Length: 275
Image (cartoon, rainbow, N blue to C red; front, top):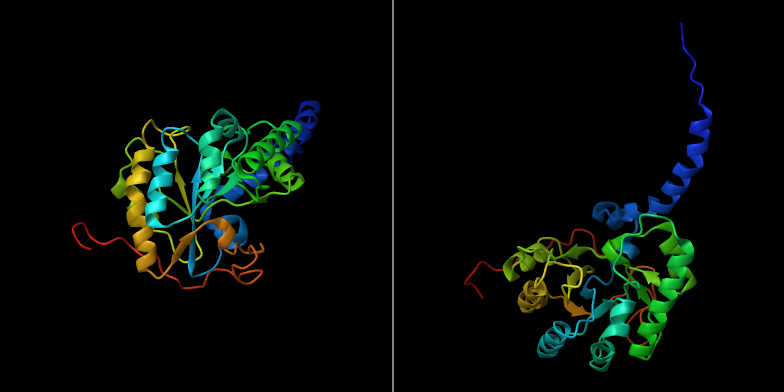
């Protein structure tokens, strides 16, 4: 005899909560690198095949960020810094210095938190405050948004759209936030997956990372830039990257660039002791 199943009142009461939770957290599936690159190349930060976008998260930090600025000056590289609104307000001098030295400021949110519970009003309010703080420091309205931990909820998607921001995550990272990160490990992790048109994620602070971990990213940066250049790639900010579906800044090239060339192979660092 076949038994029939009847949902009780409790199941009907819980169903709307489950649906709401899935609607809230569902877009966060774009955190998965493979899915993001295949289905959402613009969100992954794919751009010009001859260019690599260099980005940093979580600053500004009055202790560590100046070291990155000096090193980038020496390397002749400009980058995009995804800064936290609360850090910009707390440390306005390094935020303004980022802009003064020609780097692009973008929005990383107000605070470095995880959005497990739906709060669209808070998302909108905090992102609006972050945009205002970044715009005041940079002298221009920011263009890009990368949420903390790369977790894009439906509320954060909507808040970014209302603020006129374009969400961009990354195609490769250095795992430089770990306690055991070293310059060699960061370089190797980036090199294993980066290719023309990619976007690199590093951190210029240990604000949400293991204490002192920023030194691993700093130590790896010269070799990462050299690896890119030896592979024939230009390193620069997102505004020059030609992110798929986004217009380039005037004077930097075509209005919209196509996706990264298929078949491009990642470069790998030279063996220790080799030039």
